[in-house]
Length: 133
Length: 133
DNA sequence: TATGGAGGTTCCCGTCACAGGAAGGTCAAG
DNA sequence: CTTGACCTTCCTGTGACGGGAACCTCCATA
Image (cartoon, helix red, strand yellow):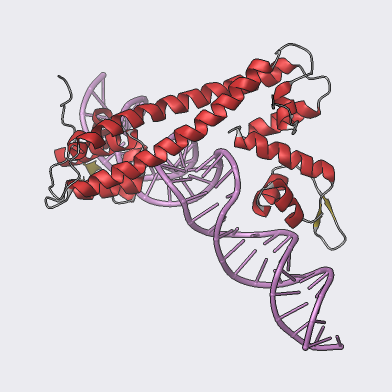
């Protein structure tokens, strides 16, 4: 299989696949013409990577997850630990975004959104200490 | 005021303040010795930027927000529109993260987390089509 | 007056996970 | 033989800074 087929089947852009080879996540063979030659195992790895990335794992997380996957003597605790740390980071991000969201929603609701210049959003950004009941 | 004072008062790292000058968000004067010389208006702008960034606005958003802030003839609708677009992006990110979170939580809960190799997290990543009742 | 340390300056590289694009080689069809 | 789709490598850009080198400046103290 050439990179185009693999791209189609895995859903990953060819650019991404080449990048994954660059950083050592996959090691496809080469044909006589210099083209990358992928086998089923490569496709499987790429699908694994695609799913792990879709869950938000970093590339380095993915590297470790793949290593664990190929390590018959792994402990599931190690995998779980990795996933839990990632989960914690996700929760922190959601929390940050949620706070931004709430603040922004409140400001947007207070803004007339007409052709007049008066704007509570800008007032807030400029440091008006309103808000308190 | 030198950059150190401004950094302390605004809460922004000196590196960030220099960066903001580089990209034209602020234009502090220079003292005879070459040091940046900040006045109250600069500090005010930096505080504005700090708050806008804390709400997740991009630098380019900040640039427009500052322009609107200094434009006496602005329409609050323009500000509101910017904020609403940003809000939409935040909501999309939260939604993405929430989906990752839910999937990961489910997988983590199914993982024994002991010293045995069997692991539903890895099974899922490797493409097991389990899940359905 | 020398000096030491805490400030300041510019400049360049690294981050993260690729995307875009240039310049060129390869292959199958017409 | 040409055309066009595919492949290759290599280089640059992204966003918003952080780290650090090499150097300059100021003030206080011995």
